[in-house]
Amino acid sequence: MKVKKPHYGVNVLPSLFSLTNLFFGFMSVLLTFQGRYRPAAVLIIIAALMDGLDGLVARATHTPSDFGIELDSLADAVSFGLATSVLLYYWGMAMAGPPAVFFSFVFLTAGVLRLARYNVRSKVPSDRKHYQGLTVPSAAIAMASIVNFHPIPLATRGSGFLVAVLTLIVSLCMVSTIPYRNFIKAFIGHRIDIRTALIVSVSLFGVLFYPRYFLLLFFGLNVLSGPTVALFRVLKKHPRKKAEPKVIPS
Image (cartoon, rainbow, N blue to C red; front, side, top):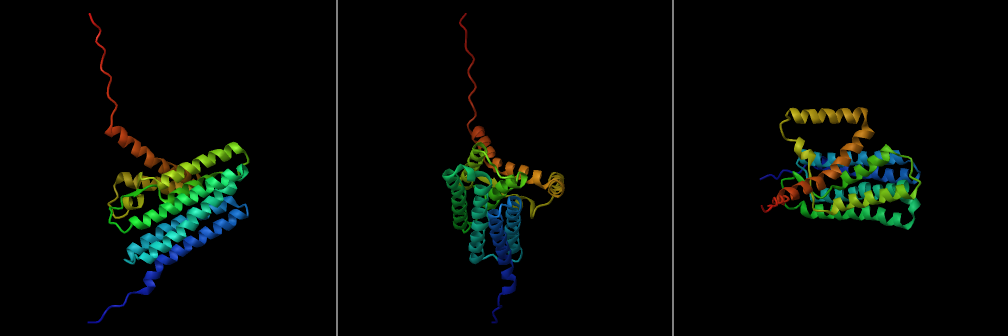
């Protein structure tokens, strides 16, 4: 019986997207060092697009592999962990001194821990409808969208403090166990109804004509969606007891 050899050319495709993701992350770091914060933020967003495409290509060509998973995570650690933490430090927290180093490192650490946890749990079958914790690309895009919206570096300790607090919150969301919706899984492979078509149309309009506002709004809401849904579920599971009416003796 003749054994069919694998098509190595097809297997390379997902890895090429991962390496392209890594390249954009590397370029983002260089642009940050040059003080070009908006292009650096845009490259992080483009790297996230490449990161999404490598998974889609791997599944479409039926070529997912352990090597691809590890390569993807290493690229993500640079493009979304390192590049974003360096960007946040130089753009918004450098004036704060040593505390800024701590908070930017917290973001990098949270991203690496989140990627390590994902690699371990990816070997366990799941419905892929939800992620446990905010994904690293989503966190990076959310922070990069803020820089893209206001690329002028922050110069006051108060604004630097706000960036540090926001960085800490997003980092906690990454390492949390809060479920986040997998929007790619929600739209791909399902019939498009009127509501979905409307959402896609509005999103395309926002990306094409108001990209700065759309990215900031969409990924900001995405960060908040996990804690908000989790809070609603807790309140629904443990509703507040109504106070019993007081009986006034006659």
